[in-house]
Image 1 (cartoon, rainbow, N blue to C red):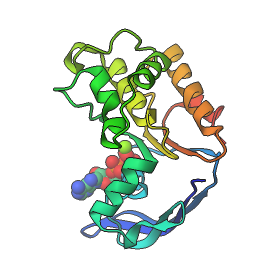
Image 2: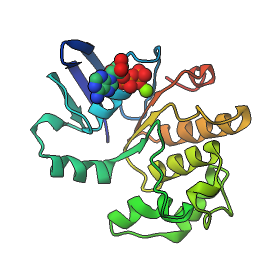
Image 3: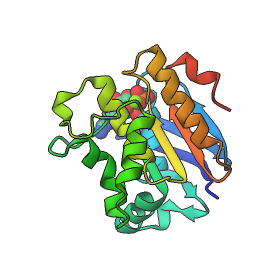
Image 4: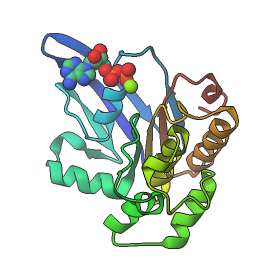
Length: 204
Ligand code: ADP
Ligand code: MG
C-alpha cells in the first residue's frame, strides 16, 4: 500500500525561501487537502512529492522509497507506475485527441485498454468526446481530460493541483466525489491542493 512521508523539507530560489521544514505523513486510504494563499509554494511542494522538482534539505519517501536516492530515470519509472498527477496547467498534449491523451499512461505501461479509457471519460463526464482535439474543448473539459489521464492506470498516489479550478459547481462536485471514491481504496493516497471550500467536506 502507498504512503507518503515528507520530512523537514525545505526549498529556496536563490535567497528566497519557498517553504521550510515541511513535514507530513499521508497514510494509505487518506484524502488530504492542502490549502493556502497563492504563491506560498503549494505547487512546488506537490512537484517535490512526485520527484518532479528538487529540494534543498529534508526527504520525501513514497511507499518507503527515498526519492532523493533515485536517478531521474528511476524516479520517472516510479512515477509512471505509481503516480497520477493533475497539473495546475493541465498539460494535455495538443496533438493527441482526448482518448489518446487519457490512454497515454496505459500505453507507456504497455497495457493499452480502450474500455478502461472509455470508462474514465464517462466517469468525468466526457463520454463521446474521445475523438476531439484539445483545442476543441473548454477549460473545464480540458481539466477533466487531465483528471481522467491521472486516474486511468489506477495509480497508488494521486496528486491534484487545484483540480476543480475550472469546473462549475455540479461538475466540480462530481469530480470530488470521484476522487473521494478513489481515495477510499485502502491502498491509495490522494493529495489535493485547493482553494475550493467544497473540498473540505470530502477531505480527511
Ligand atoms: P502556489 O502553487 O502556492 O501558488 P508556487 O509553488 O507556484 O505557489 O510558487 C511558490 C513561490 O515560488 C512563488 O512565490 C513563485 O513566485 C516562486 N517561484 C516558482 N517558481 C520559481 C522559479 N523557477 N524561480 C523563482 N521563483 C519561483
Ligand atoms: Mg499553484
